[in-house]
Image (cartoon, rainbow, N blue to C red; front, side):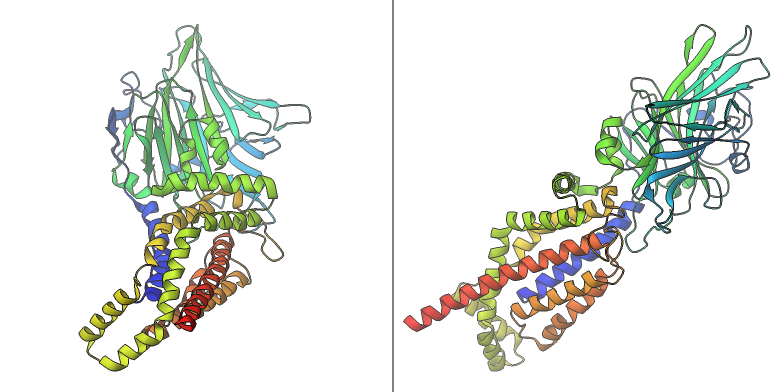
Length: 554
């Protein structure tokens, strides 16, 4: 196998591997959890209000009898309370005190870029809401009707926080308050559930908080480069576990029990919603399939007793997967940006890319500079590869004469070629190892560019308004195809005519393949090709001059 064919074979295989790995990341089975665990059994009717089987509820609440949650109760609507901050517009429904809609003011819709991104919703787009309530008969839950003193809250200039309070008086006389705190410059919403009990009223001991969502793929999701959409749960002991829709439906989910840390989230490309209980407080996690393709991901937490009151505080994150922000909010939350098995390379690559962006102020420029830096790091390896290719090109005429001499006798031809390589001190595979070594870096950079929300809808120059989307006029893929034709010309011509024709077709096929890649990825590959051409041309010319000088002296 000639060196050039192997090089392009590796490049093509890497691209196919990236797509296959994306599919695997989306469909791989959950990671088993070793410490205290319990298996969630799906299906059947349970008496608990929250969609949690009795096996996971504390003994004190396992025998309570209240309404079972179903898809029909998830979309009941009442009056809306609107909350405006500098980052979002949220809508809270008085039925249940649910967070029903969250519009992100600094992120555009993936389909209609004239509109803002709506992450939480309960309309035509489907269901994706945050709910919470108390466990126990007669307690306030996500079907209880609350009231608010006003229908509009605004974070005005000079304010750093606004507090939204909803109240409900239960038949027992208990006054339940659901309080949300919105802060300036933050996607984290503080949530507190408090009930003040009259004398003789039954006291709840646990509360639940859940994300309820249908299984529709998010708008703009690419089938060519699929990313993960589903639930995730994290604890320090068990680390990250994915909760796919199919696994939940089939009852294959294993979740932590009796832990005192972690969070549970629903993740989609670039964004997430997550319930984060206070660290050091015990909690259990659940995931369950409801009716009509709707799923619930949540946590059960104990209430604290202060006199005749019971209360609990948690946090709700609704926003983009900004890695530094997520890392500061809760341990492991940054893992929702799933770089896969090459995370150890992808994280520092993103750090370098972000540092460059902070300096140049343009993500496209940052990609170009990062590509140059990577090329410099691998310059010695690339030089060895191109030097081997250049030697093979010099031997091209000799290989052709051997082919003519031995005709179809492949065994004698192969032996003659091996003897010539030994005499000329050329390793026909010498250019492949350096490229193989670089493949993990290429794959890690692929995931870095694909999953980083910072590059979402980031403009580059002129016609490229979004580095995370395909080039609208396919200029970059065409230019990349041209660079591949140039590389074909610089590399040795395979002695086999069929292989030679294949190498001429490969740049076209490869360019079409890249028509479906985000512009940021194609930009990286284009710049890398240009730098490779310059390096390869320089090495080839130098070797040819050296050989010419040696022949003249001889």
